[in-house]
Image 1 (cartoon, rainbow, N blue to C red):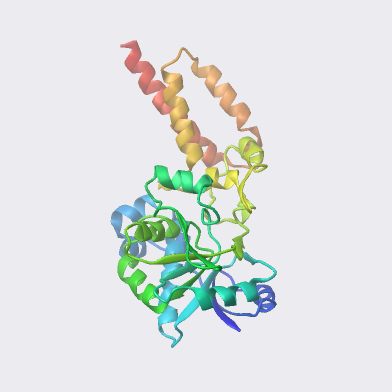
Image 2: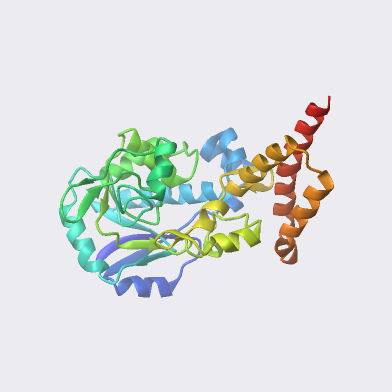
Length: 320
């Protein structure tokens, strides 16, 4: 059977049973819950600056992967599969995985079994990757089962080699600065690790298709617009609302998302136009009614602050 570590905050025997159907023998790695780490522990792991601005879920996820790599190096295995607990596999996973692992170049550090942006040379994620200077170049075909990715995001399913684990622990232990998949892609971009992807993809993530399952999507405001965005798929099992609600940074108790940035930009725009404060507040509260009904108050307050602050600052400056 194929050996795999499953990163999870709570063990699920059902998941082990499901994976066994694909000839996968899973061992749970108890994930690190970033929300339960105190300030001293956070500072020790990522430093005082990043412990302040990084969402706890992001820190916990990254530390959990590093823990899995350490556990792997205690074994005599040459490589191992790492799954997050929201993974789902293709029906013919066993056959395709066997072919892939037999044909992946021996210099691999990470072999992605499914990632965002790795299924074609031009897609939504490669476009964003180009803007952020994350892309490693055009996708290259190695053989029938393996390609080199333009960009590979998502750490829900990958194979890591011993060399890869040793390298990543050296480069990322106590040095996490963002989401773990972003850190991995940055290292690939800098040619510090060698990454490949299976073709076709043989694993997917469910939390990107159902945002309520994701620990990284902690700010769902505004629910109304997110509901509309949830009807748009930008990739197989990736809905657009996931990208808009995933936590980027934290400011005190508030999680900052793409929506947070949008509200900030709207505030700047409105500040330069002849809009009335009361009208803005009325429209904002109207938009936030679904969130108020479920008690999503902290996120409403956060986005209102980001909307109104630049509005008043610019208004006052223009009135002088």
